[in-house]
Image: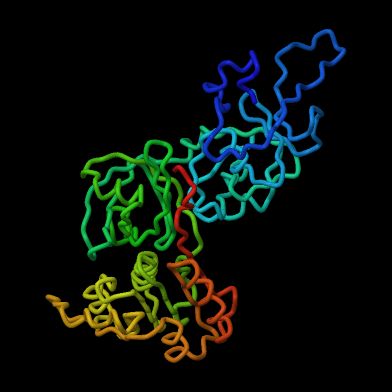
Length: 396
């Protein structure tokens, strides 16, 4: 590798690997030095190529990072960089969360690796390294995404349920967004996770997130421990799961599980604030009654707005027995005990002409997307925000 070269003794500072990473497979890669040109002006400072070929130059696509150039086999740019020990924040590794952004300073990234990015980001060469398999050589930088970030302050934390923490953040500069979009939180420049926005700019003075606290979740544990006044960075927003005015009488179906309620709560309040008069049904599923957070608030919204129907759903009969021990200070809607798919099928059998929002667990969102399409909803009227867990092999 590059550390074998006397020209790359400063490789750590330049972003090159200085040893075998934990993710490195132990194939016997050979170092092939680019042939010197007969040009007398040629110097010894040409980059070194890490190649899988036996001492010959590879015809594979090449990725240049700092003073090192790597062959790219049947793998993504992210996989190759990580394999070289080059640190790149990442999470879902599916092209959804946008935490793995890198920038191409030479060459054109594949269009599929720029889907969903802001036009200004695409124009500057940013792309999603976790899904990028370029067909031409690229020169990339991995340490300038700070230009896309906004500093923010943690101003409040409130428990919504035994496992869901509401986190309130105040950006230190302008941060326009649509309720229901998602943002990336960045801590220490390396830990990045995505969370959907439950807040509405016209109603809330800060950004509101619903964070499920996981025992081994690095970001959720950090947020749980962080004190008010703590600084962090934001990147985004992104996502298409938000209310678009213009059809105020169109029926809306908002359906999600767990903290998939966060974007739906933002979409619901945004639609009402913009005068949506058509029927709105919000269906929230959880494994147990304790997971049906914001029941008082949603019951109150349904009571004060005749067009709103709120359906809390406990997904298993075994867990429904918890409901007897629940005590609320205000009236709450009693939950339905049923698989979410059955509720959608029986309560909303014909979805033609409606707009459907699906948020939460990725597997369930995929199943519901197919189901609502079969029940008559047009594909262009289905807006989805699938939640993907951070890849277990990710160090970030």
